[in-house]
Length: 271
Ligand code: 7PJ
Figure 1 (cartoon, rainbow, N blue to C red):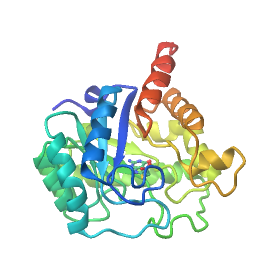
Figure 2: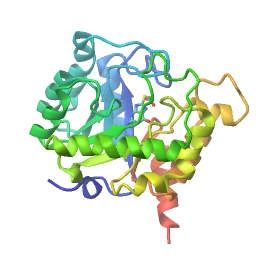
Figure 3: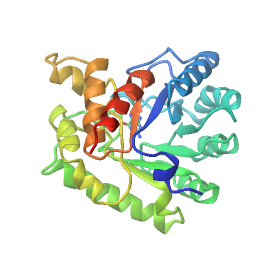
Figure 4: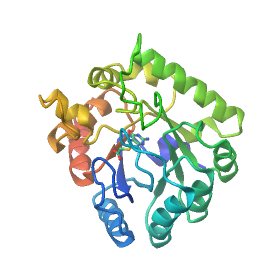
C-alpha cells in the first residue's frame, strides 16, 4: 500500500460524479447509471486521478437518503466502472462503503469524518482503503444557518486533528488519510476564503489536504451575486490553483479537463 501522497501526487484532480437528482452543481445530469458511467470515463480520459461517485446529495438544506436508495443509485455505476479507473466512494454509510470497496473502490470520502455511521471506521480499517476526513459544522439540512467561529482555520484544524486521531486509534494507517476543510459545509463566504488563505494551519497536521471549491456558491457570491447557489468555472479554477499553491494535494472538481490544464500550468511555474 502506497502512502496516499504517492498514489495521488500533488496536484491530482478528483472528478465528481453525483448520481443524484438534486446535487447543487450537477444534480440530475448523472442520475441515470449510464450517464454517471459515461461522465466518469470521460473524466478519467481528461486526466482525473480518481473519480468520486456519490448517491447522497449533501448540498445545503438536503435531507438524508435511505441505504436502499443510495445503493440503488451507486452500485450499478460502480459495477460498470470496476477495473476501468480509480474510484472514490462518497458516502457516510458503512454498507455502501463495503459494497463499493468490494467492487474495487480505493478511497472512502466521508463528509461526516467517521461521525455518521459507527461501523464505517472498521470497514475502512479492514479494507486498507484510503480515506478523506472532511470538516463539517452541523449537518447539511441546517449547516448554513449562521455559522460562527472565533478562528475558523484553527477550529477546523483542531476538529480534523481529533478525527485523524480517532481513525488512527481504530486501526486506519495515518499514511492512508487525507484531510479536507469542507468548503461550504457550515461556513460563510469569508470563512471559506480564509480557509484557503490559511491552508498552512491545516497542512501543519502533516497530512495531504483535499480541497473542493468547484462551482460552490461562495464563488458566485464573492463575484457579487448574494443569492448565488453556484459559482462559475473561471472562479473555480482560480480557487483550485490558489489552494494548490498554498499546499493542497487533491483538488475535487466537476470540470476535470479545465482543472487538469490549469493545475498543469500552476505546477510548471512552481519553483
Ligand atoms: C465536498 C465533498 C468537498 C469532500 C461535496 C459537490 C458538493 N467531499 N462533497 N469535499 N463537497 N471531501 O458535489 O461539489 O468539498 S458535495
